[in-house]
Image 1: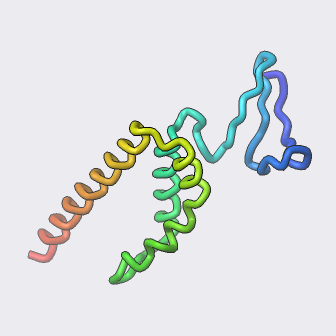
Image 2 (image 1 turned 90 degrees about the vertical axis):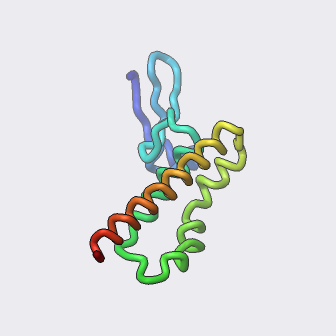
Length: 114
């Protein structure tokens, strides 16, 4: 690596972003996101981070959907700009994982109440 600069004042790039020059080529890297991740993966990662920020959802977790959804604006915009079938398929797979996880956790809770 030949140099690393925080150039947010000149370019408007967020402070968490850096321009890295490697062997004469510049690579853009946001430390919050792995550049090799797809936009669907970034959306899912951000969703998980937002959800982790809550300690509890009370008896009505569905009441939190709008608040959580509104915190995903940047990732949703990026996803919609490049919405390819492969990216949409990643969302479907993640949704199915969540359904399976919910079913398994419901069974665990049912076993505990017996």
